[in-house]
Image: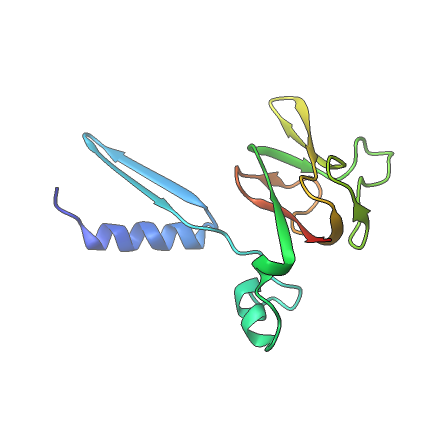
Length: 143
């Protein structure tokens, strides 16, 4: 199979420009799938990976935070209904099994629960936003 490097470059650019985590192209018998991990943007507009490098002496993010990821594609909701307060806020202490949010998928509300106990350091998705499978939702500083 011949690899068209120019096509791969264009597909990679499209993946970045559109903010996609995965792109698949099927042409006849040929199937090309490109995947990338989407990095959340820090408050100052600097990607989290660069922010970690900028903070000299800070431990790597993986060592101090646990990331809760979306187990499905759908719409992210921080509260059970529009009149209720959010399940959690930044700074809240959570226990393993505690509901953090719901993801609406095909008109079904799926509760997303903490798989570790700790403190909510960051909420990475805006209320009412679409989420993809595997997309980071919360950062929890584990105890």
